Image (tube, rainbow, N blue to C red; front, side):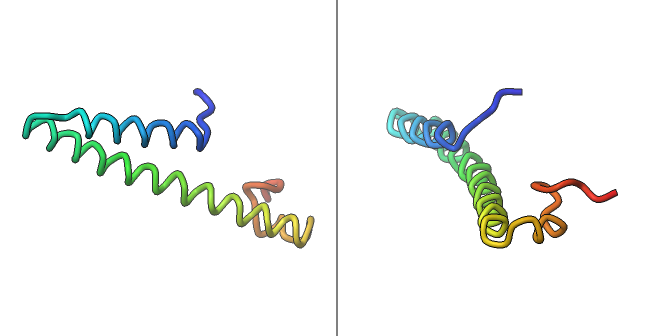
Length: 79
């Protein structure tokens, strides 16, 4: 599986804007609007997830090892 980055997401969002600008027919515009809505939903989930990871990293930076038990995704998983 490829490693995607937030910069890749940014490129996809701008590419979709370009496709919307190029859509000329009614059906084509409608299809691009629907595609855009789906892309926005996925992009929102990706950015929400990145925000959550950043918050976890901040907690770890501020409090060190003591928070790892509450952040199993960045610490060792409990058995």
